[in-house]
Image 1 (cartoon, rainbow, N blue to C red):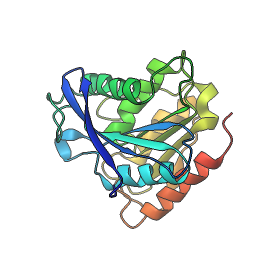
Image 2 (tube, helix red, strand yellow):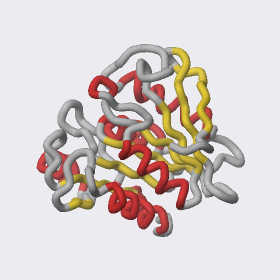
Image 3 (cartoon, rainbow, N blue to C red):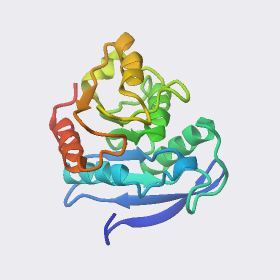
Image 4 (cartoon, helix red, strand yellow):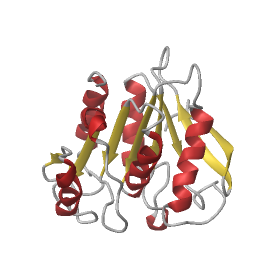
Length: 214
């Protein structure tokens, strides 16, 4: 993301996982793990939406951790349709923000396929680990079902979708959100990749992160 980005590899379920870490100025508020879009369609940790979310977290005082899913960039393994990718995300989380006494505050974020995987990570974790903030952008809900978000976490969750997204239709996201009464922030005129709207997306995330956890 910048000259201060720290690149490394960690041990993952299918071999090495490539990780990029960006720290804020001063003390860190917590750790945000951010997941990238679909590996079979060019998704990597350097995706512009993912970088935009990382910048928003860093500007808001969080340590931002991006990573490449298995089979992408320097990460070993091959695409596993979300199952193995969930395990990849959980491995990165355990490395960057291990649970236990003194554990840092934790946020989860994802874009497109990465948001889909993030919903399942949240579902796996929320009963036994506090997730202070959840950010889901362009959430993939049609290729495979995204997990529901526990109602108690709705106040700490930001769901953003482009009005003109033709990769994941807004209608499909609303069909996923409606039964949960989960609010969705719609960006007028925006497509899936938020071309020309990334500064607005960044500001939406920053505003969400500034709101008190509930």
